[in-house]
Image 1 (cartoon, one colour):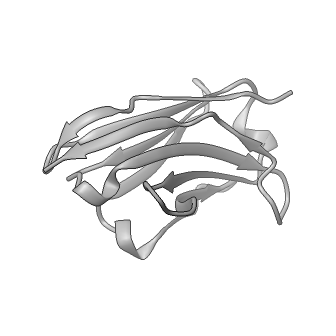
Image 2: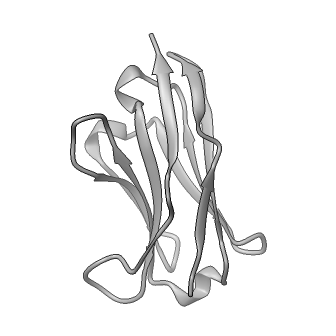
Length: 117
């Protein structure tokens, strides 16, 4: 069973920076797509950043130029850099992975981010 474990959340001030990490139990080469979702308070979970198997990245319009998704294949970690953070970045961030197209197969339990204004 694939396990994804997020870390790096916490309280951060507006204008600061934050780096979230997701540790995977197996190599990223077995996944076609990796992603980060945000679930803001009272809202549905939203895909904010993704990376495919060849490293091509996509971002939601709302986070463009502030979020950077990256991966370290040797350490089996997926990262999300947020700089600068804004109050609307508050929420729970989930790491996800899938094989092929369609629904995401694996999810982490999430890490909470709170941005103070």
